[in-house]
Image 1 (cartoon, one colour):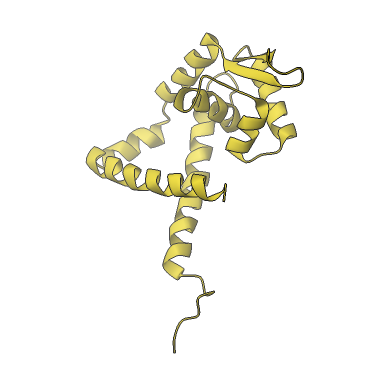
Image 2 (image 1 turned 120 degrees about the vertical axis):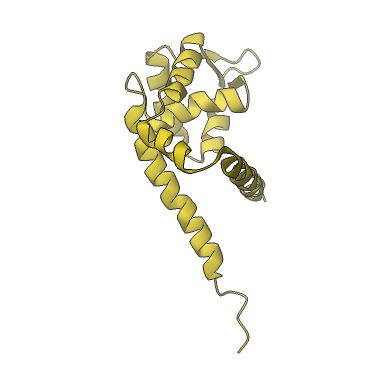
Amino acid sequence: MAKQQSDPDPALFTYFNEISIISQLAGNIFERSLPDGLTNSQFGVLNWFVRVDKQATPTRLATAFQVTGGAMTNTLKKLQTKGLVDIKPDANSGRQKIVTMTSKGRKLRDKAIACAPPALVEFSEKFSLSSIEKQTRELQKVRQFLDEYRYR
């Protein structure tokens, strides 16, 4: 009997299910080690500024993180209160704002990475760096595909 096109491939489901579980477990471990009351979502925004761009509008950040504008505004206000981002009016638009990471934000982001929890240290002892690098390259391809797919 031929498999119908609409049937999900169990291997694909398992693949993405594993990624989801790993994300949840690793995120919880990582968040517990974050310094100065930083949350995963706040760290994610700081990390975005290092990985992607030096500035952004709140709308661009909300789109990047696939959250509502209100949720992003809340995260940005908390980061601003901690002195980790600056939010200023956009000179080209009376309504838009431009968000940038402060040097304090960069230092805290770097500190968060340096404070790797013991579980990550243990992890690095069980899995070779070459294996991790190979898997990372493959996961980057998956992320890139999904990033592009969401705009279709």
